[in-house]
Image (tube, rainbow, N blue to C red; front, side, top):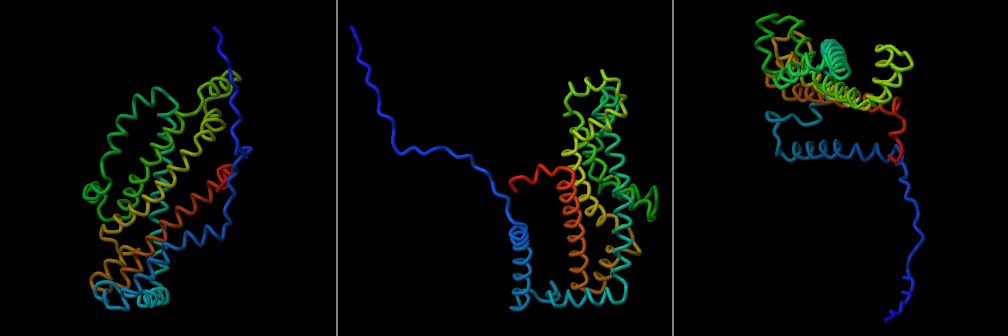
Length: 277
């Protein structure tokens, strides 16, 4: 018994496939899109104040906030507060990043370090840093040391987790190859492990810098006599919602600048990530 084979006609309407290449968006377009959200919020804020939905005792209108910025900048209070707050945040962030990176490399690169340190560090990581405020006040009083160390603790663990994870993801065969060529452990970490863990390190840096601003707010509540937090406490005493909004916006601007700094580092250190964006 034979079976007749019938050839099926080729389907019509097919087109030759083309490779899809994402075109990078112009910088101006991205800047405009990113600015739409903040501009919309300011417009809504101004409209609510103009129509009486927001009274000055609840939230000062944008015009009053701008006048408060001029007042604080003119008498020197805002520049002095910024210098004090940035010094606190920067010192705590530097300590936290150094500790987190060092511990992350130790636990991620050595088995002994992982067995000795990781479980303890993971336990400490689950403790909210805000719960340490009363303890730090008992240990260090209301000095600058307590404020800086609180920021350091808050910024250590994001960098530690990111560094440890990034180091562990390094190609083990590449590390063994470098050892076979006689490269020392220090050189392997510097030349192979850290460059390979760069994406994770930058992610940890972004989280740590954001947390440094959040921890700064908490630290400046410890009976501060200078800084943005001190301005906020003084404004609260006199019900100056315009100055309160200035301080809140300054904190937000600091966080935004920190994020922009990490984005710039990503562009410089990992230019291949810019493709298609």
